[in-house]
Image (cartoon, rainbow, N blue to C red; front, side):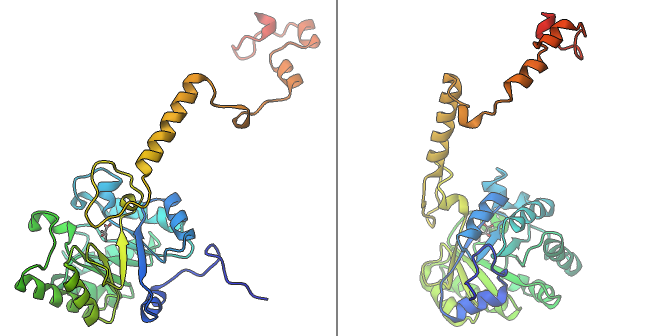
Length: 308
Ligand code: KIV
């Protein structure tokens, strides 16, 4: 009798699996992941798409924006996430200036994230301005996820993390961006910081899934930054995020408990400790009758009990 495969043994999802979820009307959950242990947990929880977002620049590496993130850093974290997953489709962000400068470099960098990194797709920012780049990467056989609305790599042009598309012109530009990204062959696109009515209208007009972040519930799916979801930071939570747990409190309390036990001498306890055979230990320190009878001297400069 055949059994449904567990997440650990299921085949890896592809963009065809995501298209199937979309066709079946299932809202798609995507989370960012940057490291092996977190990727394992999220994969085992059944999250179908994991994004190695360049948000890692801020939330993992402590940069002030995603602009500083390099290909080498993206590759390093993509490899770790791929090693931690068996089922999820891993989407790797293309960092600032790794695409859109020349078609050759865009394709080469997308190829590196797939071939060396093991990603199943890449994501890049921009609407109409990135359409040709998306087209040439897709034509080479690499699945691309688009990203429109607030595009953090353009933060110096946009002047801050503001909701996009709120005026007649900006709203229409966003509609054209969405269509351009779809037409270029993207299998899905992130809508970031877009008013909910506009995000819903874009979603209705497309035949590929929209994955929203700060774009309301009318998108085909939702993405969140994992450190927001887990409440890793006590000082700032974006409006679009919900803490599902307060890990900064949990981790802080665990660290304090550890320190208290170290100071009290109660860590490590017997469960965390290994003892050796007592007779062998006596031999190591030169305490046996034979040792006392012989005068072998000091072992490699370490005084044995018989020498003391
Ligand atoms: O880098 C990232 O985490 C992202 C998400 C916000 C979609 O691009």
